[in-house]
Length: 375
Image (spheres, rainbow, N blue to C red):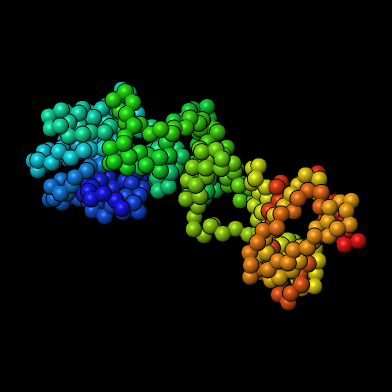
């Protein structure tokens, strides 16, 4: 159960704010004041009166006039702090600054100025302040064609639009929005990670624009090749989730190729990197499929509809092992290498079997040899 706390989130409708609010609500925090561009001064005053913890995420990073940087980042921070002070509210504050605060540009200077205001506020009032100089943040709900290369690339590639790269070797330092939000929640629980006076997100990724684009194109093409990327890699896993969030709704579904004949059908579902192939096999009543064995490939069969028999015989042996299978009792049958095997539909309905093979089928090296189970 979440602790009793009233939380003010500025920039609540923005990319990080939206993710943070959703996470706080799922964690059981219900007393959340969402402040954004349409919040009135009187509403802000009420929020600052009631809040016991503040996430200051609001800011300007793509204005029409560079002067708006200082007004939007430093100016609003001053307004927020003066309102809190007027209400004698010295609650802890988490501030989403930027790695550019260390750089000599209008945006960086405005973030640095906001940091200075927060540190002065902390010194004067004793309020606990956590400053996060975030690098580029990526993840779901980030606005494309704005200030995120990842969001723009995901959006354009998912829609079949071209992307622009001035230098593919340009490096990006990236943090995933869920990791940022997790760290922000840790700060709420007094467990922030502090490095050189600034709070930090523990997991950051360095990637070139070219490598980023290559991965995203591989994700796009993988839907046709039925491949799933290597999700053991943290960055690939997070980027793939991000890419999928940019798919247009009408493209969520995509067709598979059913190889059908009088016996039923066989449909490959997906191929993974190092974790094998998943397929669906449909066998019509009275039909037996298989009667082959493998040297190294091994499989797992799971019948989810109908009833049948799976039979195996070790190569060189005359002893047949049988397993009655049914969609009424879900059970996986392992098919070890060196065993010829088949599956027979003994019922009146179609026998539907989910099949996993330890490696995707390779016609150049099929590792599949025909041999009857029952001699």
